[in-house]
Length: 302
Image 1 (cartoon, rainbow, N blue to C red):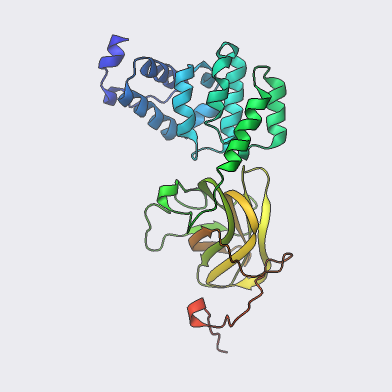
Image 2: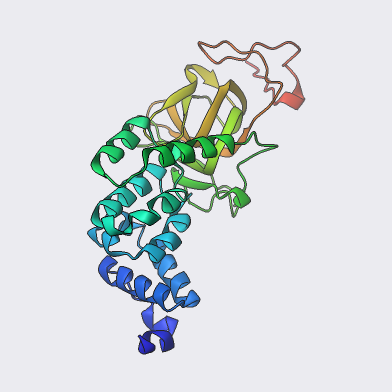
């Protein structure tokens, strides 16, 4: 243990094995080695969070789990964190007095009721009332944002369709994109938290495009809020939809087939004065002139 306390962080840079990583994190927490704890957490990120699905996750000590859960929040889907923690609880029933406090680090509001119910059935030491109280408390904290929530400060990240640093380090010519026609390709953005939203702004690359947008809380239950797959769209899109709790935004181009669907800008808002829109198509019903240069109108001359 003394050798661990005196260890040079640089000598531990090659920790890649989940088993060794869990051992070192446990020891670092026990010795209150903040630098080593931070290094272990960075290694969790470097290894693409494989620790979540590793059997070694179950060997973590309570205090190590209390460091790891907040670190994983906004970086890994909540249901994956929850599943890993349920497995940890089942493997560590003697630590049941800590379960409720640790559960507060997971956004249970993002977990489906079916998944919560299954976990409660599988783990006898989960306090049902405590779980419901946590969910209610998290729902009460759900905020109506002021301004665009897609900022580096919010912890937003790109899951698919572009570099994870897209919103942190804007680069000329850098777009979010995917190949149209491939069922396995799309653009998914994690907002880093749950927000009440009803308005999106996206800027399409040059050309004519068709697309749809889904929002969801947990990457399981999808809610299609915009479907312009039958329409030709250009440039800046100001989109309105029924107020929804949103953590993830999924955008998928549908035409032209085999093209590369690209967007250069994405913003998300909650507005108290949304424009009227057709609930079936999502098409905005304007109350004033929309054919203005200030609204990005483009004139087509034949």
